[in-house]
Image 1 (cartoon, protein in one colour):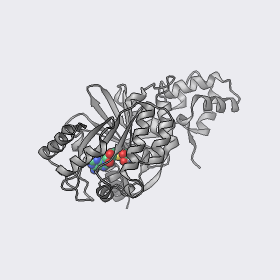
Image 2 (cartoon, protein in one colour):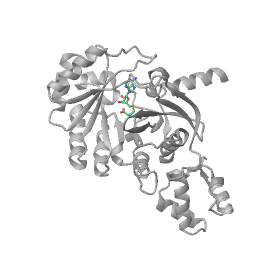
Image 3 (cartoon, rainbow, N blue to C red):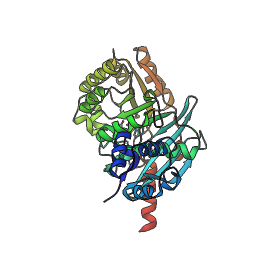
Image 4 (cartoon, helix red, strand yellow):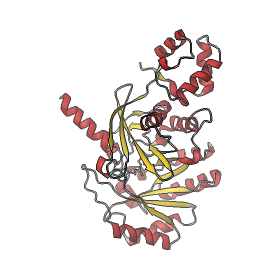
Length: 350
Ligand code: SAH
């Protein structure tokens, strides 16, 4: 059986574990600082801890939840993509994006995904397993260490559905924003979901200050079902009601993501219908021309048509932005890199 990731333990949990090992509680604080402030992933660095204690820790826990396997730098915009290997050999991907307001890291929340969105590469092989909180933290920590620059924003928009891995995801948010750790502002954290209604409601009750992004991608249920199987489980109306609740309880503006797919959801009527669906909600729409993957023949909506869609939303009082495409030269769309890595390594080993 694999060892527990030590970075997943909160300070109270670490204190309990440390005292169980017969050490004084202050050792937990020292250890926590090594892990979450100094971002150490090797006990040999933890020189203020007794050697025997360090050896025992290393035996019982996993200290290196993620290790960089490969990285790719975009020559277009400095976006850097990372493939990380987990302790069990699984691979996940993360992205570092540089903006004028700081460095943003996009992390994965699961190995693969079971939501089945038609245009998404992450879901093609199904769900392998959930990540634990330490494996999510590890992606942020490693990228900060490798780049040598502070990470100021995190988006949980890589592979996986964060609300399908609810407990680990919420634990991650609390830990990455912990003032005794990396202390990221929760307002700088965005989590994207395909719209799991019960979990959105539950998340509202956690009283976090994170931004919730909903992957809507269609103005009505019929069109949504063609792109996202999850639309067979929840109606848009139910999702919007849960969003209203989230907004009322947290005071946070909701983001909607809308991938523009040529001829499928980018027409004049679609824009008007979408504006209608979102009217009265404190929200923002991110329009993302779909990033084509080779397994499907979806095409992106071109510039002027995307502009027209945006203008129609704005005319109907819905804020909208067309997202800049980052890392287009390094396969930065969800799951593309992991998939090509798995294909390449399979070819080599077979
Ligand atoms: N499961 C979550 C988060 C992961 S995907 C969710 O569904 O929101 C992050 C975002 O990228 C989602 O909005 C997803 O729909 C979108 N996405 C995935 N593949 C894409 C592609 N090929 N082109 C454009 N957007 C894509």
